[in-house]
Length: 382
Image 1 (cartoon, rainbow, N blue to C red):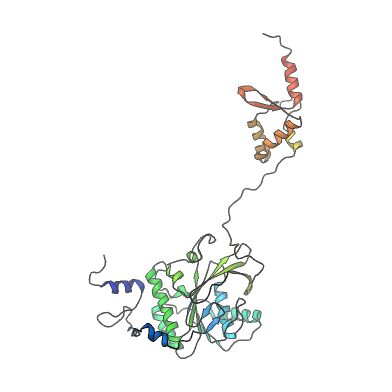
Image 2: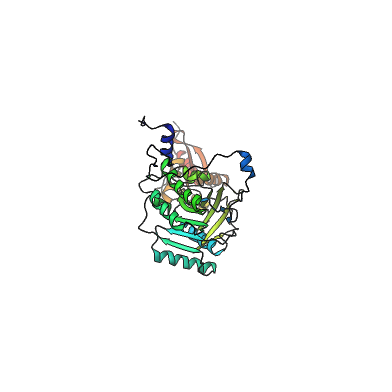
């Protein structure tokens, strides 16, 4: 039952993870709320000399925005985020798109320092660049905690440093005791990321993951795992969906502040994702179905070998459709070919078809039928 002492706005704010003032003047997490900006008329707003934020990656990322890189397991999301930070810091192309050289902070909550540095060295060698002075690393493995505790420390540490991009990898390390399937918990997490953008002007990039199962039949935003807030809140959502080709991924950006970009394909060539213009982005990997191994189809001569050439040799001289099917099963042949082969043999005069016992059709070589008919003629009529 909802607490009757909490008003609707407060209850909604709690559900959405939005800090608000309560009677003691403190927000639910114990921090003071920031004052709200004044209400403006449209006329006043239109008279402002507003400047669009700087474009960090051509057609994809503005300064001060939130960027989610989403993919399934083994889609190299951390490698891609490392490459993103390195490329912007060096002013190098990222996935074939131009970047604006800017200061970048990579906040690493997961990878041991020695391995992150090994990864960045590999990226620099592949891109042919020297270590950019614009890239800073913050190794916080072992210091992860809920976002409302760590994000204020990050904001405090980078205040006045003019970072244009902050990469947080991985985002799930800041969930604390929150549930990624609850809209309120994820809204609270992404609101904390937004605080970095609003208070420092830096764009914030983080990774998210796909739901389980095949993704090809889903709308691009329905592929994101967890709460739907993950698929609605970021300004730029970059999805990496497996292509039919091995080690290839289709990029389908969902953009709030840029014109749409046509999907394109990347191919993983360690340690980089490279454009693959030879691959069609429409060819998303489909779920694999088990298919039975094709059974061999006998030749006409092999088919005829199952029919005795004479009576009295211990073999069944007359074959019904069921008899022929059993022969195909025993030999591991494709039963679907039996009818066509039977008809071909009859057409060529190699077999005859007659109605026999229990009103069933029986098949045999002409010589067998002739021998049977001759044997019947030896008995006098009744």
